[in-house]
Image (tube, rainbow, N blue to C red; front, side, top):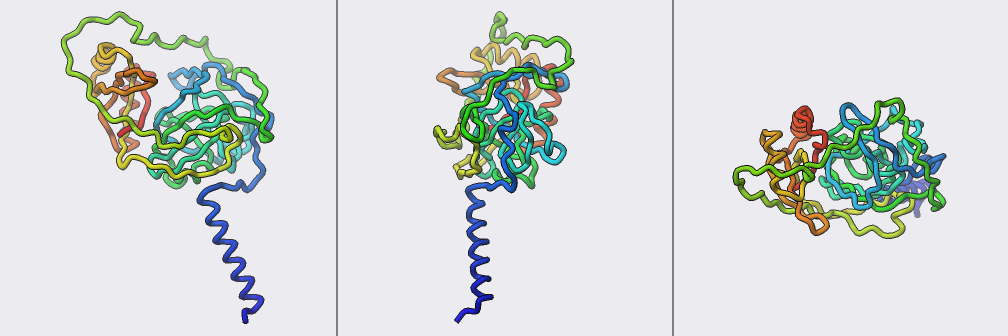
Length: 311
């Protein structure tokens, strides 16, 4: 016959095991969600970080790869760029150009963990990063201790208030855009410049496209993120590249490669049925090498240079 103390011990152990099993698929915040607190829906005005200008816009077809990081203690309790309050226990993120708040799927290409996060802030401020996620999101994605991860970010839909209602829309410029010089227009796309004849060049290198490692979105994913973690397949090996441009014209891609010099090359990809010629660095495996290459190309005047993940 079991004693009352032994029964209590068994019940406590069972509760602990059940809790551990739950954490594998969902995150339960330790504090009430702060999302929707005076928040608005906004696209935002152009703003500047360092020497680079960013131009927020609606991007329903957004689908990019890069390096993610997470941001924490110094932002606790501060207002995000759309007026909500940052809470480390919320599943949120910062992005430079997406509207706010929108839901995106972030997939860790290192371990296959995939979650939906709510973009409600601006950042990252480190040019070599594509998105900053909250501490809770970093833990769910499995890179909290490492600090960074290779990720894919795909747009899902505008996010909502906690009760499911849409947020009011207001495009008042964010604080970062206040008291800055007149906004310059984006650089003229090289595709629109006249093509200068040049010597024959070798055909571009063809590389396999990175498979989309995330399930198709469902209507429910337009609401507040639940913390549900999906396990999805990822490539066995990925590399980092610094991409300085993508063009519909092969000749224009070669012109940019020749202008910037270095170990840049041209490869092809398909997007919306169109062939694009990407101007990229050689593949790299370490974040610090990619950061250094990005800095060098930025110094040469390539403000559009950014780090991507591919096979």
